[in-house]
Amino acid sequence: MDNRTLRSLLAALACCLGTIGAASSQPYPSHPMTMIVPFPAGGATDTLARLLGERMRASLGQPIVIENVAGAAGSIGVGRAARAAPDGYTLSIGTLTTHVLTGGLYALSFDLLNDLEPIAQLAAEPLLIVGRKEMPAKDLKELIAYLKANPDKVSVGIAGVGATGHLTGIAFQRETGASFQFVPYRGNGPAMQDLAAGQIDLMIEPSSNFPPLVQSGNVKPYAVTAKARIASMPNVPTVDETGLPGFYSSLWYGLWVPKDTPGEIAAKLNAAVVETLADPAVKKRFDELGLGVAERTQQTPDALRAFQKAEADRWWPIIKAANLRGQ
Image (cartoon, rainbow, N blue to C red; front, side, top):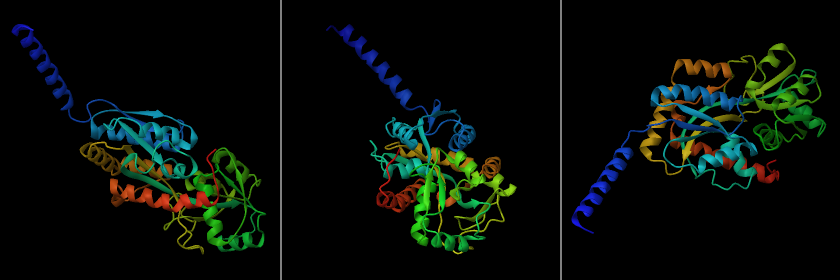
C-alpha cells in the first residue's frame, strides 16, 4: 500500500470516528421515545400514558410515541421493554399487575424485578369493597359476620384469575376467616353489570370503577382499602374506620426503562416525571380519573424499587399458596 492510499484511508477513518463521536455526544434525548403500554388502547393505563407522554414532551423536548402491546396480562409488552436497548428511548409503563403479579402467575422469559430499572411511581388508587344493593349487611363488620355465617354461599366477581381484585379477595378471606366463591369475568365491565343487576353479591376492585354506581344507589359500598377516604366517594369509610384496620390494597402505576440504562438518562427521565406530576393540570386530570398522585418521596427510582420488591414479597406467596396460573 503506497503512502497516498494509506493517507486516504486514515483520513476516511478519522472522518468516520469524528462522525460517530459527534453522534454519540448528542444530548439525550435527540429523537422521539417509545412508551410501551402493555394493554390495549383506551384503558386506564393507556390514558395515563398518553397524559404523561404529552406533558413530559415539554420537559424533554422530544415526543413520546405510545405503543400498545397487549397480551398475557401485560407480560408480552413488559417483555419487549425488558429486551429493548438500554438507551433511554424505550419506556415501560405498567401497574401492580404487569410489573409484580405476572411474576408469580407466569413463567416469564425475563426477570421482572431485575431486568428493568425503576424511574418513578406515578399514581395509585385503592380498591372498593362493594355489594349488590340488596345485601343484608349494613357495614363492613356486619358483612364479615354475614360471610362467616354463610360460608361459600356468597359470590364475588373478579376481573380475571390472578388480577388485583382476585388476590385482594383471597387476602380478605385469610384476614377475616370468611369463605366465598369467586366468579371470573373478562374484565370489570361485565362483572359490574351483574353486580348492579344483583346476579353476583360482591366485588373488591379498583375504586374508580364504581362512583356512578355508588352515586346512583345501584350498589352498596362498604369500605375503601386505604388509610384515607377518597374524593370521588367521600361518604364511603375506610377499612380502618369499619373494623378491618390495616387491610390496604391498591392498583398502582409506575415507569421503568431497560436494565443498564445509563444513570444520567434515568435521572433525566425521573426529573421529567417529577415535574409532570407536580403540574396542577396533570393533578386535576388524575383526580378526574380517580387516581392519587404518588407522594413525592415515592417518586424516586429507589422508592419504586423497594416498593415493587415489597409487593412481590406480599403477593407471590399468596399466588403460590392458591396455586394460581395465568390464563
